[in-house]
Length: 316
Length: 119
Image (cartoon, rainbow over all chains, first blue to last red; front, side, top):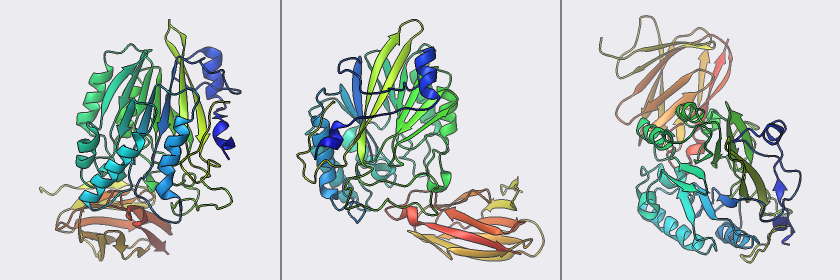
């Protein structure tokens, strides 16, 4: 039952991969033709997203267990990532402030079981839009921040505490200040919840002032954005900035605008947890002058992980 | 005149957005009252005719909501106690979706509707 967790679906993108690998241009996704040797990367991190703790309903009859399955799956990786980032919608929304705090606390308690002790969090609209991020900040601190890790600059930005899905000029100014000291070819990774670009405004799959962030980010040559919100893998590029959406760990959503109404993909009893998963991102410095960071994304599926919390898996 | 006006020339309709009270411009406009509350618009189907000037009078019954139609280039917010008026003259038949753009809870994503424009 753990086979799916052992399988690493390396991402290949027509065009993008060849650009990066062949030319050495920084900041883009490197295509991988197959599993890479463990230890080849300088470091790795895992992106988990849209865990929606507190959700219940037909789209996931195992909802009370899926987060624990994900923790077990991450713990089963044979080489643990340096850190884990959760890109929002940690919890499913509720109108009850006390219940929101309870869900956030339960989420925090469950993910405390991760072997990886360096964990970064950010809110989704389900966590933060109804109270402006108050309960989230009480539980996890600032909703936007930055940090350095092994030569890569990471910035987490909040496009959900405003229920209209804006970053806001104050945060954009902060981002500009945060980045301005970096060299033009500095490797930069941005974490956010909603897509910064207009993937599907009709489905709320955008950031109202995301174009301002993209206009700012494109001044650097080596920028990759990882986000959630859309509950599926998705890869896009805007003017040299790569954007990669992660799968959900609660329920999948259909491809953008592929049906009249956005609704969860029905649970398939024959393929439980299909479409659910997380990703591992390996970063490798391929050149110092000019700086070039190759990122390899491995998508890991929860399908076939088994209904309990004792799922196992690892590198091939 | 202190009231803010925004005129948008769009391919599918002439849309005039005027937050606050009062109608904009002369002529006979049919007023269509639309209420918004978690998690529905009422009516959810708005029927219009090509060439007919109308004003959508949007009122929230509970909290801030949004009203956006990409096809008709409408994107406004609706606050309780302050009707938001959207003036438009459809110039093309069709079915144009609208949805709430302000996250309002667990049914937010179901808060949608459609404007049906006929000849």
